[in-house]
Amino acid sequence: MSGRIVTLPGDGIGPEIMPCAVRVLDAVAPGFGFEEHVFGGASIDAHGEPLTSDTLEACRSADAVLLGAVGGPRWDAGGPRPEAGLLGIRKELGLFANLRPVRAIASLAGASPLRDVENVDLLVVRELTGGIYFGAKEEGTEQASDLCAYSREEVERIARVAFGAARSRVTSVDKANVLATSRLWRTVVSELHSKEFPNVELQHLLVDNAAMQLVTSPRHFDVILTENMFGDILSDEASILTGSIGLLPSASLGAGGPGLFEPVHGSAPDIAGQGIANPLAMILSAALMLRHAFGLESEATRVELAVDAALDDGLRTADLGGAATTAEALNAVLQHL
Image 1: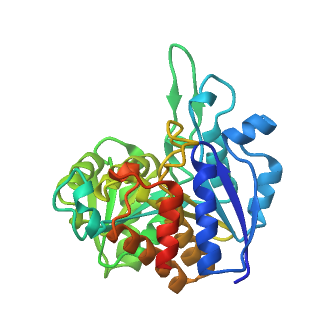
Image 2: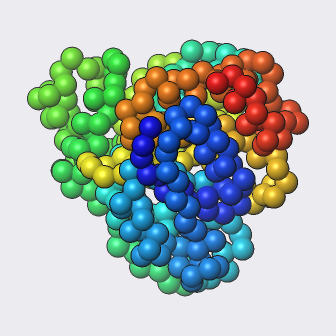
């Protein structure tokens, strides 16, 4: 298999889990070329900014981008923030659709703090380049504001992704009883549904109700469609259904060009450098890359089944209540390939 992949290990545990994904890719689809660049806090330390023009250009010309994690308390004291690099790369690459699959694994049912999570299999489709995260900002010591804005075009294109991914139902999540942007969101989603996707069931939920139902009735959901900030929060909430946020991958896609594939979890600076980070979300993010960036469905499925088999055989890292190291987790997955 040929293809050029830019790797951005980033901060914290990122440099520890990224090599695991590369090892798995070499095993299941040999032939990729990898080009590593510093990013986030590591880039601030080296270059004074979280995303350099050279790194951005390398990502633009790649076939796909793999990201480890960004951020940490050492960059909280002022100056540029590592997360600004992540927002920047999403914007510059036009990555408007964030896909976060959440699938319960039978052997980990006991790891979830919730009951009745068996057979949960849902997808959060989050709008990624609009809303309050990218709106105009005013910051001061006495008053601050963040503008939340959406256009019809932005809502329609993310809704089309969600309807296209649905097996039976799209649940569109908003706050239409309070927010003007949510009322536009609901109107546009409803119109697109009636015109192009009438055979898919559409349900509208207010975000507070959706948050409650994710905990009380998670098997109800197929595809959750929502805006940037709500999607950020709900997808992290959904992670508890699997037993650990260390198991959740994500894909950020645009209309063309390379996609960005990364674990949902953060940089975990408290365990960085100890060799105990869970690499499975990073490995599963590589599987999403095989599927969405290269069309390698069979290879992606092999990786996902290998992760399942390793967990079925008892693999447990610290976040899952066990003692397996990062290296031991990688080796368990490789054995099942």
